Length: 143
Image (cartoon, rainbow, N blue to C red; front, side):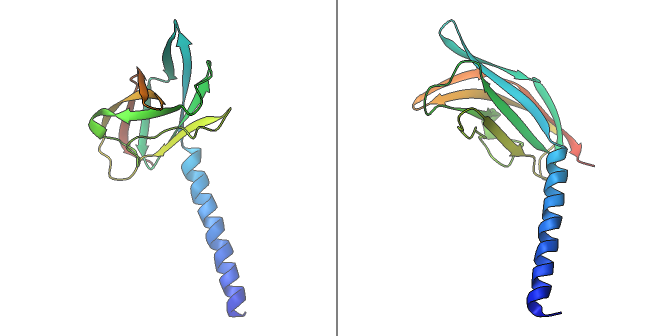
């Protein structure tokens, strides 16, 4: 077998293994829904479930549903108490894709078991509106 053929086979096996690992990580992900709406001229949201239980190396996914269409350029952002985030990002935010807004975050291995309170914010340029405060609970390693 030539070096080129060996390298190609090794590359394909590596890609296949990477895909299997990614599928395993995302299969055990948790999902929550953040429903955003205007109520009496004020913005509000409702996250379901209010408390999510995760383990290290689990992926969390929030689907942002716009019951009232957000202003152009606005996005939803999660902010953790004193910037103490259980995720790789300090302030995960949605991707602003029209029609399908999604926030995703991965729990790294070094996170402590604890409850992490966070706030859901609507950020529209310089104007920021705090909407609600759900909880993430980290409880051990993924097994």
